[in-house]
Amino acid sequence: TLKDIQLLQIPVVEDRRGNLAFIQEDIVPFEFKRVYYLFDVPSNSFRGSHSHINQCEVLIALSGSFEVVLNDGIEKKSFLLNKPNIGLYIPTGIWRELENFSSGAVCLVLASDVYDEQDYIRDFNQFLGSKK
Ligand code: TYD
Image (tube, rainbow, N blue to C red; front, side, top):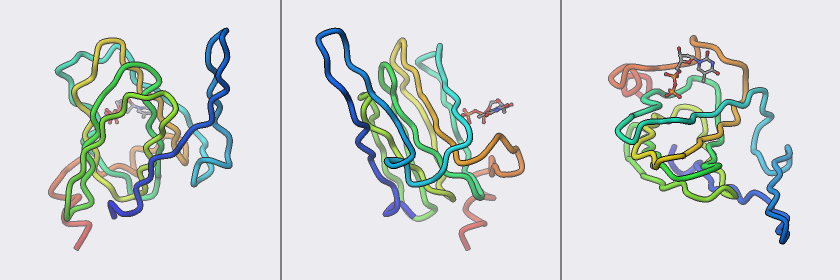
């Protein structure tokens, strides 16, 4: 449920030469097997619009900003991601919509398993049905 969502603080090494953030297994609540990222996203685009049956993910706004609207089938909560040192942990079984991408926004995703279309629910009514 939405109660299981977490904002993860990603450690940053600050330096006059530029900052360095690093993600290791100790700050992510699952073992990640895949990394993917969204970039060159038009500002009027909607991404996501699905839930996962087993996989969980962490989303990070590496650059720019975007909104993530999460729904557990009962309630909705919206997050503005705009910091490269904050990760949004989305547990399994949560519907997500990504929208309002700023220009230059990059959304990095850590996923708990390799890509598997069978793990997706892409129909909202089917998602609601899976919650009963
Ligand atoms: P899609 O799930 O629609 O993107 P999002 O929900 O994040 O907006 O994925 C777009 C296409 O990319 C779809 O055909 C599946 C494919 N895809 C992969 O091949 N591998 C991956 O790791 C991901 C996330 C998607």
